[in-house]
Image (cartoon, rainbow over all chains, first blue to last red; front, side, top):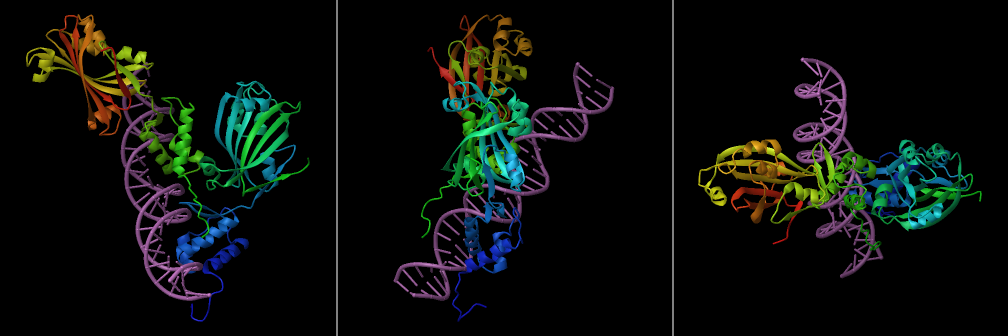
Length: 242
Length: 242
DNA sequence: TGCTAGAATATGTATAGTTGTATAGTAATG
DNA sequence: CATTACTATACAACTATACATATTCTAGCA
């Protein structure tokens, strides 16, 4: 089949990448599905595994595919639209974007506020706070790593509430804060360290979007000071209604 | 030549080990505490249990963590300071170090002294002695395996006293020895055999500190000849007041 | 109250499968 | 001759699963 007179115009790996791209675009594999193994694809296309890997690397680069060592290659979900406005609610935001929201609690601890944290929350340095570390997922794919700080003086028992619900909105509600609004948001880009990369399932050094935000209650008293690291290639923050 | 930059990814297990090390150093888990199960940690970090085990194995190697099959992984207590001077009292020593002392009797028997033992105790070869085998623990963690020999000629009924109290000091007191002092101590390092490893909960071949000591009464007559095997990584003997 | 048997849980071990990385070799091309 | 594209092979790192073994908890019973 190969042969002789035919100078190949397009490299083999490119042809393979295109074939896979077509499979993906035609819905042959749905987001979250596992692709055939590299060995299987190599067999199917009649090439070496490395050639398949070359093609796959490009699909990963394009954000169409996500690979996990030892596990396989998976169809990546398209970026989630995450609106940042006066009312930021993780659950609602994701449902509105047509995703299945999920939160995973990493750690909930009581400790004292650092100087910066105390200043942001408008409490005294050394005042007790509740630190809530967690992971946000959309359709089972991690999209953000966050830390929320709550002043324990104003919100007694919020740590217990968080343990149960894992929902910030619900926990604040139980602590007596019926409603809260986003007072400020600051954004920067950082590189993922080893731990962040692990949780977010990205490579170390991958770009993350860091959001530092402050939520206040109806009386504009700070109730939550949060720091969130979004996986850069899985969300697009949209600013509106300012 | 595309990417000459180094990906320089730190292995997943290393990132996990570091995260746990930080938790430990920050006092999130106190000595003696049980760590989350491997399954729980695997879930938390989103990795396979084996990867967690790899990280854990290194923490164990470093002496930060101790695992017990079927029970869990525990934060290793820092080495116990065990002073060796004229007055060596297990109970007092550990209380002074802020630990909870405990002794477990393994065996108490009457037998005749070997030549070396008789020589050390200053009695005739073949004279009857009481051999007391036991295990010393600090905060529930085994730290030493010992054998104490008492001359029965001079200390009638000491075996019965030991059965009751398990305390050498108390038993000697009941046998008429109000006070005793350490006359000599010899130290060497040996490798734990299977039996010792079992009792001390270390791996076979682990380094042990072997102490051979002689205690004498007020009239400098030998009253106790002991051999103690300390778990090398759990105690540091301190010599003072020489 | 105390004891025993079994279920539930936890770590230890073994095996196999998958992606990531490194090195070397071969054929076609300009 | 050097470059490029692909092949070939081996090993490392991590996952997935099953099972072995030790410990702890609990129900039931005497």
